[in-house]
Length: 362
Image 1 (cartoon, helix red, strand yellow):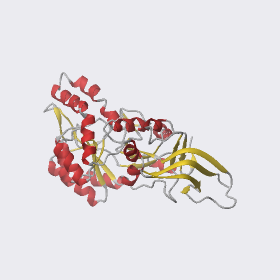
Image 2 (tube, rainbow, N blue to C red):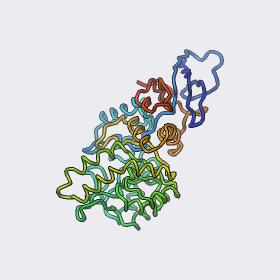
Image 3 (cartoon, rainbow, N blue to C red):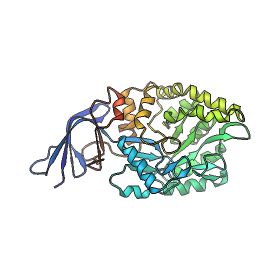
Image 4 (tube, helix red, strand yellow):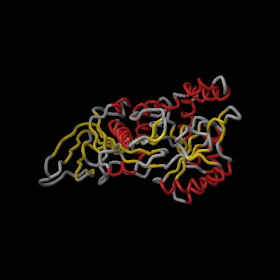
């Protein structure tokens, strides 16, 4: 018979709830001790969380574009070893559906391929189209993804020499409405200020990065419940992005440096206003995989408590994405630590045991 896992210590069921033990039987969590002969029992001690969530990750992509299956597999394994067992893939040009058939790899929620304006994004990443094609592409990617579509909301405009919105406001509104008609949610890459006002007016569901949030857009996001995934470890690269552009596009370079300098203040203001915030690394573009613990520590610098950060990476993120945690009968996707991550977020960087689909991983 299959081995039963007995996890003893603290099972962190939610921000305000823990239990002293649970069992993993037939791939699911139970808080009822098994009776009779259920096969071998293996005891694991520690603090258990639902598998961590990377809400902005690109499996199947690197800084050049799509990667082969072997590289995709290694990316997913790296995330798994960091404790990330649920990924919202925020845009990828490659087909990673085969990952779903692998019981040893994290679960992926896909947003389809990025949708960008012509010559206004990273080469080989996105559909590059014009505004009159936007709604059709949104509908297409809505049907290919897992409940999300990803737009590129702003990028450098070489004619103006600065960040600017990629789409007219009316095109954004039509795109968001089309996505909602298809039953999916919308997120968008936005660095600057102006695009955030357009997406808020359109009723978007989420924004990636969101470094341009000002008082007005922050208030709108809070009122509408628009979530943000700041990807602060990626935003830390803004000075390196700005440096080579400084001579030809000085306004853009200065803008990027300013957004970088006030990044913690911007996200802290969003948090204080009640904007939902989730952990995402932006791995798979310029950044390597497996950085979820580093991003959690960055969010803590924005005034979020340890428990709030943990929720942004586990219970809250899973609920936001419509995925289970570790309640009775839930699929057993767990990460177990030697110490309490509520006391020290750095603990997230060293998982002791990973349980994926009810089996010890690795």
